[in-house]
Amino acid sequence: MQPYIYIGDLELPVYGIIIFISYIAGLFICSSLGKQYGINGKYILCSGTFAAAGLLIGAKVLYMATKLPSFIMDYDRLISQYNISQKLSYLFGGYVFYGGLIGAVMGILIFCKAFGFDKGSMLNILTPLIPFAHSFGRIGCFFGGCCYGIEYHGFMAVSFPYNPLSPELNLVPRFPVQLAEAFLNFMLFIFLFIYTKKKAPACGRSFGIYLVCYSIIRFFLEFLRGDIVRGMLLGLSTSQWISVILFPIGLTIIQLAKKADAKM
Image 1 (tube, rainbow, N blue to C red):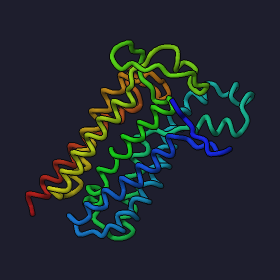
Image 2 (image 1 turned 180 degrees about the vertical axis):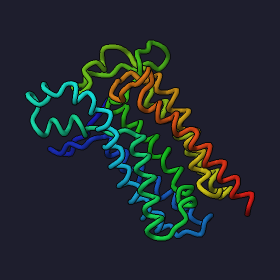
Image 3 (image 1 turned 30 degrees about the vertical axis):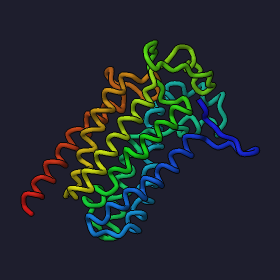
Image 4 (image 1 turned 135 degrees about the vertical axis):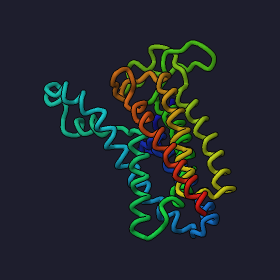
């Protein structure tokens, strides 16, 4: 586990560095798909900045939503013991992927509306970027010791060092769920990139396929998560409930794309 790297007195989070580099690299890779739709790569790069802004906002907002119930329940202690900076860190100190996904899509839709681009085409082009950046992001989670797995004593079990932000982390060996999700996301990126490049699907079909595939991946991987920061409802995590919602949305997008293709 290596949550930070140091350049002199400067402390840099490994997670943030990995996400930034992978997002930029993935954006340039996906910009090559613009040829299939007659969209100049520079416009794809611009839409990517809108997506990045939405990603950051959405990831923070959903994180706050998952932390707010515990903040309210423990309000008296937090108010008396924490200063303003610590309170804000408690509420906004992390990210939730699904919030970032929703925010990124909203950013792309706003860009397309403002500048007159077809939203289905732009979503198809940028969809492979999502699992690409996410796969490296999960590697960042592994280095940071967050989003860790359940207690596990089998093949490839991982023992993390002590982390003051997650004092229970080093108590038992853990299943490397971050690396498992990183691998599955990267495989999904390869599939979506090849599919979009060869087929040039209509009406956001690539995005629909992504929603279906990732919602299945995330739903089952959540059972291997050992942290409780995501929040729980009726035995399922917040991310599992979002997966249940996004799965039929993805199927609907795919069906609409099929109908659009049939009319062409």
